[in-house]
Amino acid sequence: MLRSAEIDIAFEKEEDAELVMQSLSPETKDKNPRSSVEIATSGKMLKLKIEAKDTPALRATCNSYLRWIDTAIRVNALASKQET
Image (tube, rainbow, N blue to C red):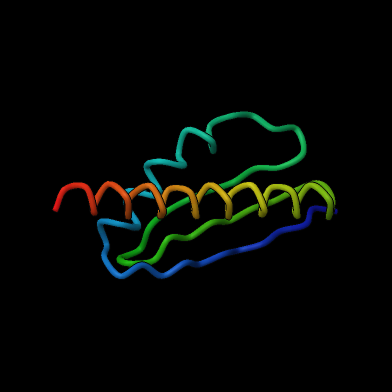
């Protein structure tokens, strides 16, 4: 039985959601035998849909993507500070 999770993350600007999606999209193309991820934006929302073969794989995939999202947000914030 597949396990699944849907995660929606709100951003202040549509461009920020798009930037994070573009940063993560290469990861979604990698084939993983235990899980799959779809990523999309809808306005200021970043939407993740994760399916996994079991609960540990679901947890690991969620944790990985949430860390990558956090990293992308922090890098974007640092880059924005340097531009000013």
